[in-house]
Amino acid sequence: MAFVLAAASAGVGAGAGASESQASREYAVKAAFLLNFAQFVEWPAEAFASPDAPLRIGVLGEDPFAGALDATVAGETVREHPIEVERADDPHALADCHLVFVAASEERRIDEVIAALGDRPILTVGDMEDFARRGGVLNFLIDERKIRFAINPTAAKAGGLQINAQLLNLAKLVDADHGR
Image (cartoon, rainbow, N blue to C red; front, side, top):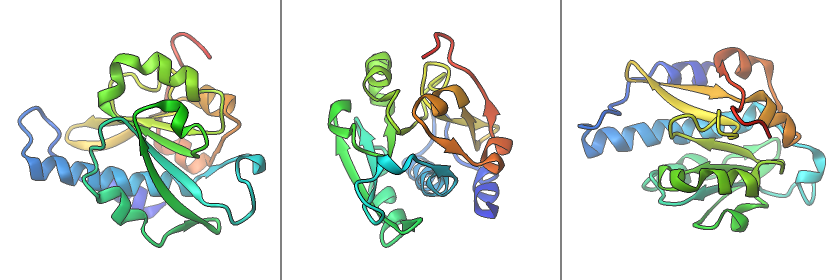
């Protein structure tokens, strides 16, 4: 948990005038957050084909990580599950993932994405405005150039996910405006 706290206080250049290196730093920090989030979420047993099946992380849409996500999770495991990263433009192609990062390129069709993934045991994570309010589970926020996050506990529960209380205590809690 110490890493999550340290990363949360890490400054990033996330404004409209952010340089390419600042944006890559932002997504390197977000990649580390994704790995840490996976450590503090419990999926239902049936979400995995076997006890040692991989934990699958999907990136939906235009990948903003520029290799940082693959580098961050390389060789890592979550409760004895090795981690695999997949990318797709169709949310249905990622329906068997455990965590799906929804890229900003998908904002125009967020309702379709949430409908496709929302009631499955998937930790949906986005960094577009109001992602959690619109039915996503976890929403990255930039506050005073620091990465923070909001969690929609109702969306997590709908997918059968249990989020560790320590993580919930660090988050801003939100609920979906239009319920799921």
